[in-house]
Image 1 (cartoon, rainbow, N blue to C red):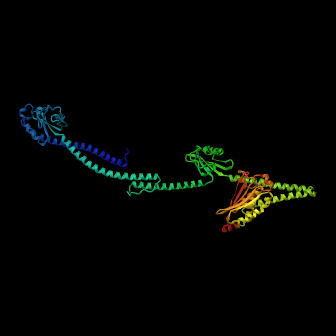
Image 2: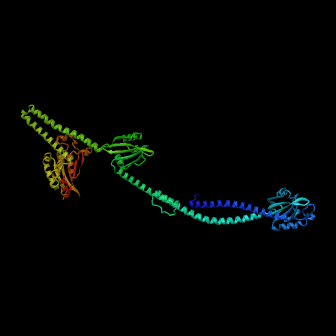
Image 3: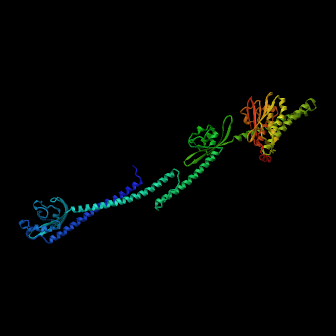
Length: 601
């Protein structure tokens, strides 16, 4: 059973008190016994001196004449009046007289130590058990010379029980006072230990509160001792821990917020190729619903062998490895992976940073395609113009039948070059943000009817029916009429070009709280799903041969997208091969303040 500090201190005080009292009792007993014996022998020695100064008279001490020793008993009785036992013994050990026993029943005392010492040295003493009285006695013997015969021994004795009784009385008083002292000191010590243990318990509870995250300071007890100093030290320690933990928590939250908001994927891998941390961006890049849990093996999460190999190279000792990984099949995404080694205390690992470079690769592809397409688009009309010009110069100028046809071809290709140049200049202005818009209040119905009216003739030539379906009470829009007409006209021209004869084209519009959505629907050939994300790229054609056959530059939808975005709207397409296409674009509803700000561009 575990004892608390209160009982430990109480028992310690009790044991200490016993440890002091027991030696006191032991040494006090010995000291008192020695003092009593010394006092007893001194008393016997004094009585012996008196007896030697007043010895028995006559021949009463002669063992040869016992009938003449009638005066010896009276002398013995007078000497024993002081309370001591008096015995007269001859040199051969015969007891002549004894104050407490019948001499006829007493044995020879020649072998008694005090008798031998007295006969040999004049006096002797001992402490031993009396066979006659069956008790312990203090003996003192003195040699008394006898006239005309051998000496006799006068022996005096005191009972040894007297010191035992006094010692017991002393011990009783000692233990009684000790018990009282033990009781008083025990109560005091228990109170002190109780107070001390309570203070220790307070500090213990405080330390447990600190361990659980409660850093409120403990109230000082104002005792002025080391416990108060300890409490103050613990309060200061708790305050520092609180500040440190708050700082670490803020830094951790800040780091988590930063890593969580990063679009780049960040992950930390330990030396065993297991994930220690991964932010949401890392999970999004890998196509995971949630960030992978800490402790999962890297190969269970990452399927890109290039990334795994880069991590292993870093874990083997390379400080930094860069690689490029590709995810997805239909819609590929490109990421620049940087893997660097990290060291913390005794642990080591690698940190992975995935940076999305899909747009960069897309722009590089667009740039390459743009250069190639521009070169191709320019080469075709220039080659035709150059060829027919050389043909005319070579003599065909004098051929009336072919001269006009060649000149018409040169003119057509010149117009195509002009359209291509105008489109490129338009895109250049849009890229440089130098396109000025004249935003005005525009009626949707009037705008749509004017554009559809322009389209009716080429649609009729191809046996196409163009219809309009506008919602009731459409609000006015804020747009540049000429630029918006270019957008709608481009979509209508594309619908005419890619819709077989007998098809239908419909222009519709609907409104919500902030914008009006225009839709150009057709029953044309449609656009494959894989090509839909790229149809707004420059020079991108789904059907290259057909596009060039109708004289398209491949820049119409790219220009339309830029113009819609400049107006503050968006454009998209819904299409299915063989079922036709629906092009949608939005234009903000007219707002005087917004219109004035856009007119300043």
